[in-house]
Amino acid sequence: MDTDASPENDRVVIFDTTLRDGEQSPGISLDQGEKLEIAEQLARLGVDVIEAGFPVASQGDFESVQVIAKAVHGPTICGLSRTALADIDRCWEAIESAEHTRIHTFIATSEIHMRNKLRMTPDQVKAEAARAVAHARSYTDDVEFSPEDASRSDFDFMCEVLQVAVDNGATTLNIPDTVGYAIPEEWAERIRSVRQRVKGDYVISSHCHNDLGLAVANSLAAVQAGARQVECTVNGIGERAGNAAMEEIVMALRTRADFFGGIDCRVRSEELARSSRLISRLTGYPVQFNKAVVGRNAFAHESGIHQHGVLTERTTYEIMDPSVVGAAGSEIVLGKHSGRHAFADTLRKMGFDLHGDALNQAFTRFKELADRKVQLTEEDLEALVAEEVGDTVRYRFQLVSVAARVEPGETAQATVTLEVDGEHRTAEATGDGMVEAACAAIKDITGVEGRLTDYSVTSVTGGVDALADVALRFDVGGRAVPGRGLSTDVVEASARAFLNAINRAVRIDETGVADPAVDRPGSLDGV
Image (cartoon, rainbow, N blue to C red; front, top):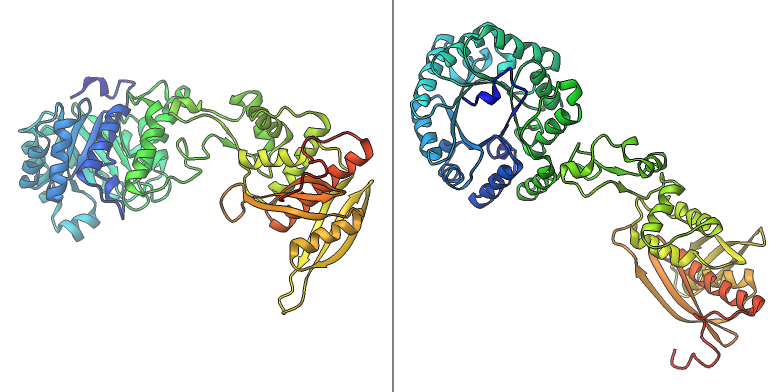
């Protein structure tokens, strides 16, 4: 037995069952190469024990466990076995080449399991446990025993079975909440009582399922009560609602070392994010965005108040350093809840250092877009800045609405509202299409005449809420004036681009200052 993991020690053994209990998740079926890749990553992660599989379950599972036992160094390689002697023989055959071996054998001790599944009496269960542990011990000094469905077992009877297991050589007693029935307070009391009742030299372990969403809470309660092994999986995958999530247990122990009295484990936490991604990719089980520690949003902030705090001092809203778990870092997500501070900081990191009216103008436009698009990317912001920043405008866009005519020979109708010298002006116009109708309404309000000579639409980002970036050239007075507009609606983007071009033309006429983006008369040949 590993003396470092004795109940009095401040180290918790991390027993990873991703490859056994985790693979039992519906829809997951890993091949031998995938299992080996995961086992090698678990070794890099620094887990103490890898439960590599259930060798008697199938020839494929046997061969996978055997390959892992031969190839993976560092952790103890464990195989699961029922109490049947032939199962234990098969388990040993699979793991015997490992540097460190463990046989994990189990039998149910709850009345409902003994009566309906095993069809055995309590005395028969005790005898079977004694025989299985003794047989496993003939192969290896490291034997783990589990009374399946411990949370629903009669406590006195369960302790009798556990004592038999210890008396026959079990070095780890694992208490499994097989069906996720336990509540933290009662689970801690059960673990504590087992330690008091069952005599001998062993490590007490906890294996919790998440049917009530309490697997991690129960596991941590068990640690508080004296358990010095925790059985868990990466990303919390496993039967039904899954197992206790390793990454959450590890980071809870470290982040709240004050509460747990410095109890820790050997896991290299900087490998947690990588391990999570690997498991997700190979199993096909996505990690929920708000998953603790390794979820996409674990270190992401959209609220303006939170963003301001994190940008000023990360610890205002983050209790863990992202780098400690191998995450890229804190992420400021720009959306409708974001504030000016985060907006300006993001632009500054992109190379746009805006202040005063320019920042106010860009931020106002950002808020308009954020109400219509869930999240704005850097590409969206670049297009926004290109559209908004740097121009002193006379006409400001307010609203466009269109009605398409579907009858043959009929036209589209558009209503446009602009702000002109602080006043709102509205005009209606028709056209062969919605864009032409919107541009005609803008001409009516501004009084600027000309013709559209070039027009292109680009999707800035993907998705149904992608921003349309419209670029056009407007021939006014012999000058080809460019315009650009941005919106989630193509018609609105076109109207904004058209108005942008008109503002350029008006500014040149009023100030006499040349715009390098505007072509001189005669430069429209071939357009």
